[in-house]
Length: 174
Image (cartoon, rainbow, N blue to C red):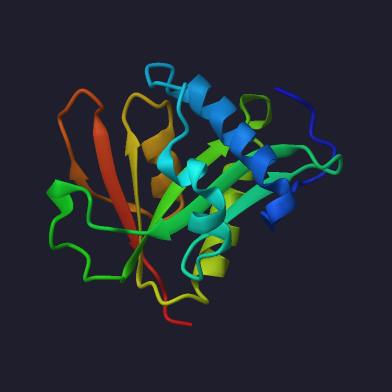
């Protein structure tokens, strides 16, 4: 654990920071999911500009230190109905999917994850979504409890190899 001098700032990624954000997400993804193929970028990172920067219904935020080091990330994409066990749960274009919520292992337990979620929810309040959806995994220590503390509820838990837990949160009308 690293000593944190000041609370990181949460900012929306700009085009000139895109590669740093992708590098950060891939580095933490490799630590958290060593069993995945890391030789190829996930589609959303491969198409980062189109998916996050050019889209009005998506965003990618990062937590940065005073030295401009990225220590956390979180994004949303429109939920596209891709998960079979959730078929029919979300009316078309009503839900956003939280993706790439990562905190550098040296900076965990400082509240950075909670800060990222709060900032993301503030941004999403300005969009058309009524629900935020995410999935996590039981094998990730503390993940389900973290999301419960943020107000998310378990909607489906799959007894599969991935121990997938699907969660969501209804957004308050502003």
